[in-house]
Length: 285
Image 1: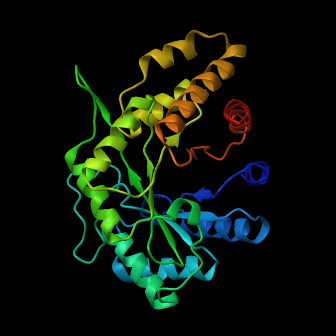
Image 2: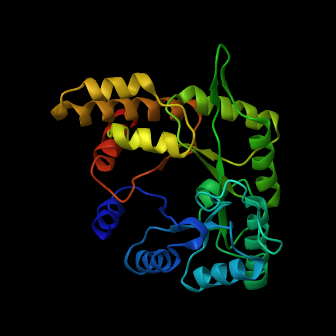
């Protein structure tokens, strides 16, 4: 994993995003990696934080530990319920919603720093009227395909995103999507819902059909059948090129639509990502 960090730190990155695991299951490893990135690179870190299964005092302690390690940027997520528990409900003392986690982080920030700070990801967070010591990202969901109606963002997802913005989120990172129209629909719907925070598209390098299928199933996203067919029909030596071209095309479309940046889902691998960045930079400069 560290080879990936060092390779990608040589490219133009605004941050590294470090996952946290369900219910904090990888907390110690995540915190150790975050501390090393801060100590050994100049790239800011966004630490993922999930609230499912964790109480208010537990989360305040974790936020404090991250702040002690030098973290100033968080991705506040609800997280997934425990696997196999179809009737799961949060406990009475647990933080149940991502917007409540955003509020909690802001409260810890105020206790630690007051209202003055360093505005650590100012390029993405410049919509805020005050200078913040802590930057908070949240999740957003692009439009989903509807038969005969293009793409549509669910009303409850827009309401949840607005609640996270109102709680103090600085920007949002989208779930996976494979058609730029899904992102454009999110931008349109967000404006109508009064959402003004930057919406950063989450992009997966589209080179591995198995990973695409697995992530679609995990996140209840329809499979991009045409893309999968192109990848699987391509001879093995050409598959990476086909996937790179598809990803580059998607990136150019979302940038043209007004994306303020890109969030690349690397899954701890730099191969493909560096080639993708070089291709996009070559075609957009």
